[in-house]
Image (cartoon, rainbow, N blue to C red; front, side, top):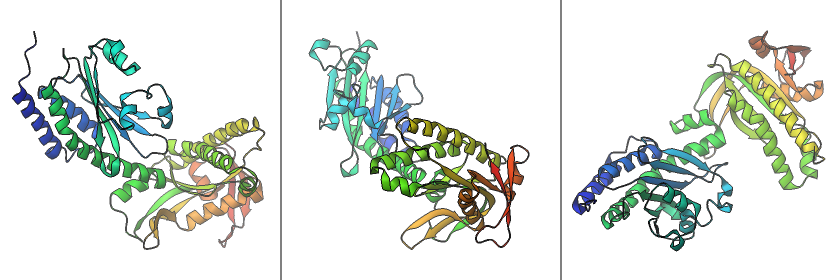
Length: 398
């Protein structure tokens, strides 16, 4: 027969975990690591914890939130992303998360009781099948009314004791503060990655925010523009235009990111990306990205043709050179971007793709970086607006 818990010991152990959360996590950057260690410390403090989850809502272009799961024996927690449409699925409807998001301040399910008397949801059936006996979920309050969720489960016969529940509830405000700091840090990083790119985001987080500051970077520059977008936007319904742009940017952007490039900005229906030359294969990587983007655009046009949409055409200009990479703008609104003659050249080459009837135009300076790895078509020397001498150009057909 199990001995009853020593309430003073459990209370002291919970207080020790709270002290650690308050004072011992300053140097820990990630909430999933803190959460896993917290669960282990709770076990050591006498709380018969078998499973715990932390559910946080995040601001991300692809995900509604994330679930952090810890179970007995794990040294690290598992993180699962949660789709925006989760609230329409059975895994959410009727769950404890559903109840708490609708205003419940506690969800407690005694899993040892007759299942017919309890809540009906697949989660509770799964926990019973794993031998869990008790489950509790609480809202975790962040500032400005944000409600997240934390859950705890045990396989202890009889479930959680009153002292266990009291100890767990006592740590919630501190866990809320500790998790909010990490979630906000992650949010700042996510927003910067989303809007300025991962490399620029890291520089900004490191303090590169003063107007006029920057650095010189040698890079391959790629500028892409969609053809006849004005006609499309004038004649298509608004939502169709937005969907089209998103599909087009997906086709272009994913290969760029996959091959080490960084998209600095979207400009209407165009994009500007760089491949810094501190990566020895940067120029080759750019052309690999262009090849994959061409394939993705072909697949997109095939899908669009099924709905009687005209194919999308585009032009890409590519150059290599030194660019100034940094903060440019007004005193209150900055843009972290690249400027310089090399960027202007890439832009002019993209414009020339219309005139010369080529999808991808490369400058000689760039072509020299990738020959003879890639088959290029010499297009000849052409005048480029803003540059005094004609520029020898090459077409890349992928």
